[in-house]
Length: 172
Image 1: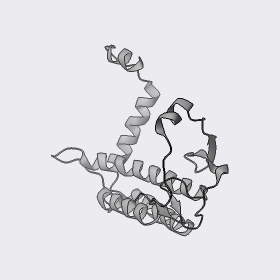
Image 2: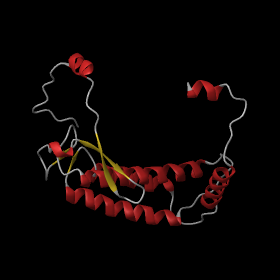
Image 3: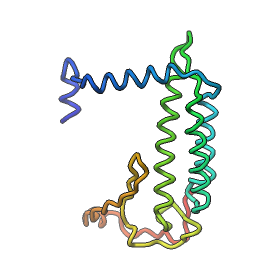
Image 4: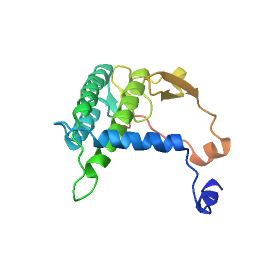
């Protein structure tokens, strides 16, 4: 309903303060002159997530990846962002990098907080499933972790899925 309503509007109302904030953020990123480029930093985020934040993980690897992520984030202060005749690719990559850093940080912090193995995410230092952690973990921007109870699965859905044998399986 909301999507249909939005599509039927001739104009979208935006808060002036939100537009000003977005403009200021874009201008700040475009003004950066440094010696770092987004692509290599994006590769470093990809690599550190593979090394320490993959489906098979442990506390030491998660902490090491967080340290590497801190270094990547610090390097973004020296990011070179320049539009050229081809367009604004550097700007898009800078915003992609910022989103990657936020997502990686939440994943690593959440992985540290989940001291168990569950589903396809296996902690080699916590190989058992802890039913007390049958919750959703959320990570705030400040790094605080909160637990949110899971709703019970609809019995009709349970009846449709049948019994699944998962013992001895590992998704990677």
